[in-house]
Amino acid sequence: MKTLVQALLICFTVQAAAQSPTLYTTKPTEAYKDKAATQKAGIFISNAHLSYYEKINKRLVQVDRDYESPLYIVDTQNLKEYYTEDAPEAPAPIIEMDDFYGSPHLFTTAAGLKVREYPSSTASVLGTVLIGTAVPIEFYPYDKNAWVPIPYLEGYGYISAQFLGERPVMNELIQAYKATTEVSEQRKYAERILELGWNSEDTATQKAIQLYIDFATKQDEMEKVELLKLQLEALKSKPKEDDTSKVNKLIKKRQFGFALNEKIEPKDGFDIDWIHTYIGYPLDESANLEDCALGDYEGNSFFNSAEFITHDLEHTYKVRKMDMINKNGFIIDNQLMEQYTTEQVFLKLAKGLITLIEPLTHTYYIAVDDVLYSFEFYNNELLRIELIYYC
Image (cartoon, rainbow, N blue to C red; front, side):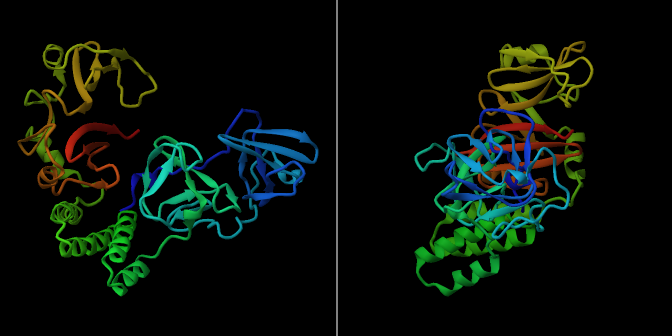
């Protein structure tokens, strides 16, 4: 199963103080660490975006970067203010395109790879990415200890270039796992296989989960085994693509939706007095006309533990996001879920409804027509549920 992290990958630009227009490289172009061009730093691929730069002279351009020293290009004839069609392909080891990503990229090759806030091993950790995640590449550093920007959490972070390369092959990892008898080595390979499985198509995901279940069972790690078995069942029973009939049946029977004080959300939304009684009064309100989820006379209302879409004329509140505290909850098949609901309980209730699993954030998704419900867990407790609109 390909993760949202990979699905939302976008191309990067080198960033710092702004200057326009953007320059593009017409062919792979080397960059240097110094103005004298004596220390090679790496290579820009064709059509790399140079949005932040300074023309030192006709033969030298300085490219500025966030957090890092600038780079220098002496082959200024390779720089144009337009995108070049049929430009030369990216040099090795960069992969131009494949079944995983359509632009020049490499893959992460380490399990549990940390994403840093800025390019330093002492920087704050924003999170981790799965092994085998595609990383767009516009500049490839020659120094393996250098850092590479990666799209992350609606922004970007940094990972070490030493952990980038070709995508690991599942069967090779499985063979290495079977060839070793050391438990520590088996664990290392099992973890890589499981991560790569989550970052693959469904058949490979299921195969990887089963392998890890077998390993964890031998180590008597039964909590992990229970969760993985339920996740495996969820994948095997997930709806066919675009089939939301099971959820729609529950919605029609008033057995699926946000709940407040154990009352399921009415079709047109909660009454304002009900909201005030159990959640309080809004901290902020807005009428963002660019929000595609909003219709006529609708706006957003933000509370301490929830966000609603409000209707100015009907004075109703439809839940858009809800933290699982106080009287907040969610009903699936007449069963109330609240703050202390575990992943295991959720997986049993939502079997046959879950369309996607994001293992790193312990988030599960249920599709309903043109919207998506996300169920996020933290420390094995239900943390937040959000209604995501496709526009």
